[in-house]
Length: 128
Image (tube, rainbow, N blue to C red; front, side, top):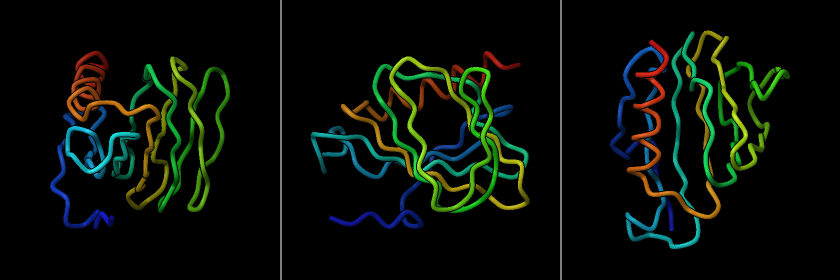
């Protein structure tokens, strides 16, 4: 099974945590029952906002540069790095570079795409 990220329709999360989320694999899409995989495209100066999930998240940095925040710690991120965000631990990725950060996010066990999008929208509303 293959997902061509550039062909998948995205959902734009409103400011101030503006980014585009693209669901690639999920039980709701009918192409897997084990994981949820999405692409998160964060423009320069953008952020995911501080958030957490009820399940573990593994994040592959496909392109772009920025900072990963977890607790009191900040670490630079760049292409070909993998981040791990344990369940219920608040984390954030900020784009501090001049190109879009492309993250491939894997949730285990799977989240419903609607849960991911609604959490992103609620986080954006709470940041204002």
